[in-house]
Image (cartoon, rainbow, N blue to C red; front, side, top):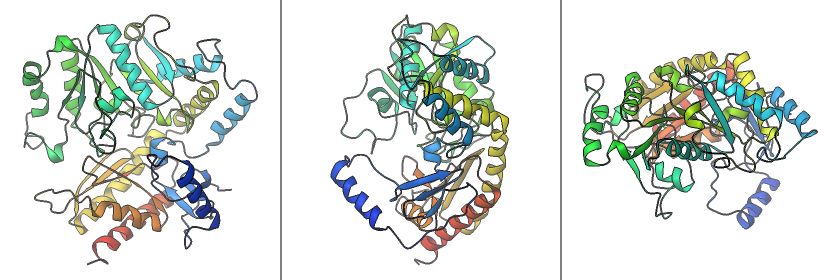
Length: 450
C-alpha cells in the first residue's frame, strides 16, 4: 500500500491484467465515457496513485479537484467505515439522521456571508447548480438565467446549457433549456473587447448596460451563475473588482447571484472559498467535489430567505445527503480547517508560479500563466503576438508528463491549457518533482522534436 509521500515510478507499459481490462472496457463500457490516463488504479494515498502494474504517478488532477485532502485521507476512511456499520441509506426525505444536520450546520458556518443561511445536499456539482437555479427561480418568480462564456457547470440539460464549450459537452445534444443568456467573461488574456487590464475601465462590466437593452431585461432574469475562477474554461482568474461588480449588478436588478464553487471551494484557491479572495458573499453557492474527500456529495447553501423559497417537497433527491457522504464531508472539511490547507494552497501556488514563470521565459509557446492558490493554469500558443492556440502541442505535453509519472489535465475552450490541481497535502519534494517532469515534457515537445 502507498504511504502518500512516494515519488513517481513508471515501468515499461501495461501488463496482461491491464490489457484484459481494456478489452472488457471496450466490450462493456459506453465509448462516450472517456478516459484520460490509460491505467487502472489499484490504490492511492495522498498525492499519488498506483496502477495494477505497480506504476506510481503524482496525481495532479486530484480526481478533477475532488481530493484536496488527498487520496484516502485516514479520518475520511475511518468515518466511512464506522457509518457503514450503522446506516448506509434511509433517504433523508423519508427518515432523517444526524450527519445531515451536523454537516449542514458546518457548511452554513464556514461559508461567507453575515446573514442567516441554510443548506441542502444532493450528489453532484451539476445537481447543485441546477438546484441553485431552481431555488432562485422560486424566490424571484422569474425565468431567465445569465451564465458566462468559458464557463462550465455540468452535463445535465440545464447545466449543459449554462456551459460554454460546445465540443465535447453540448454538440448533438440540443435543443437546450430556454431563457439562458451568455455574456463575455473577464478573460483578460483574450479580452472580447480588445482592452487591456487595468486600463480597460472594466468593459466586461459596462457591457451589461447594452446587454439589458439588447438581449434580456433584468425584470426577466432570476439568477446569474459564475465560477469565481473558471475551471474547464482555462483556469481564468478575473480581476478582483469583477465579481464585486457582478454582485452589485445583481443587487441593483433583483437577480440572485450564484457562485459555482464546485471546483474552487474547500481551500483550493488559498481561501476556504474562492469568493473570499474577491471580498464577495454570494446569495447562493453551489459546492461539490472536495466537500467529502472523494465521496459523491454536493450542496447548495445561501441566504435562508432564498433557500426557503421552494415549499416542502420541491427540492431534494433519493440519495441527496447520504449518511456515509455526510460523515465523509464532516471529516474532510474538518481536516481542511485543522491542517490549514488553504494556506498550504498558497504555498504550493507561489512555488509553482515562480517555476512556471521561469519556464515562460524559456519556452515562447507559453503564452500565459494564471493562478489563484493551488489552482494553476498554463496557456499555450503558436505565437505570443497572435495568441493562436497551440491545441496540437498541448495534448503531446500531457502525454509526455504521463510517460514520466505525472497526471495532468487539459482545459480551455480552445483545448490549449494545462491545469494543475494537486492535492493540497502534496509534499514539497513531490511539487519539485512535478515541476521537473513538466519541464522535461516541455523539452520533449519543443526541443527534442525540432
